[in-house]
Length: 84
Image (tube, rainbow, N blue to C red; front, side, top):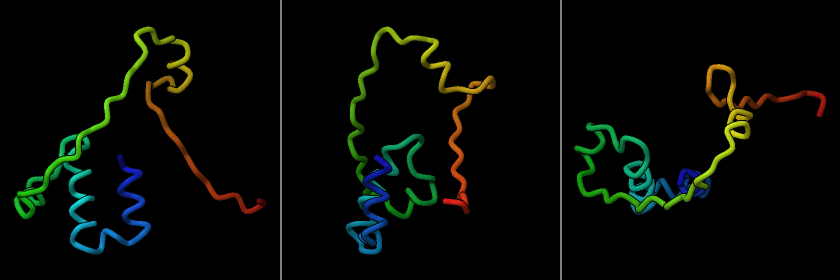
């Protein structure tokens, strides 16, 4: 869903009322929704329906463990290399 927001921002559609409304609609749908201060200023924002993602019933614990550190977190670090 955030990809849609990034596309709106990249095309500068978020600078017009309808594009900004779409960004808010995505924000309402994700995690805990809008902060109260924003929700009070935009009370008519309608959430986007979240896509249903199916998860296999049998997940291999070793496969999942490969994505986590020993503190059970997942991190991505992107650095700029001067030699490329």
